[in-house]
Image (cartoon, rainbow, N blue to C red):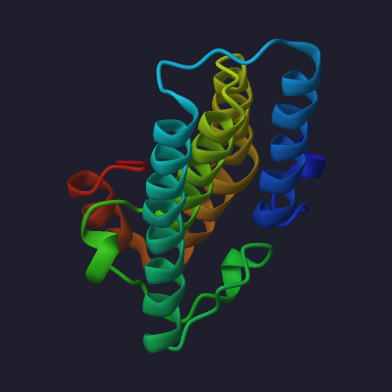
Length: 154
């Protein structure tokens, strides 16, 4: 299955998993620990946190003048370890996962959590692992030291 490595843009993968969550919501009854208004507020807060994580990662890449293209990790020109990258090696993927969690919360579909986990598993196997291989080649010990101090997700 190596043919899937860094082939599908992560936002598209996120969108596909969002559709899966929606499909689950059409087949199951909503279940929520919140009333409708609380569920909406929780979903909006989660969305804002996820969007903030993802955008701050992209902005850090732009400031460092390195590629934000996840399909070509070998074209990275610098290793970004500041800003949100002090807390996560993959804030943009963390952001997408949190946005999927917001969608699951909004639709009140607990089984949607399985899709969030599926998204995380897919991104880790087909996006993060190949990216990290490329970064070890590009940045060697510097990236390995970063890996040892900052978690992959959170």
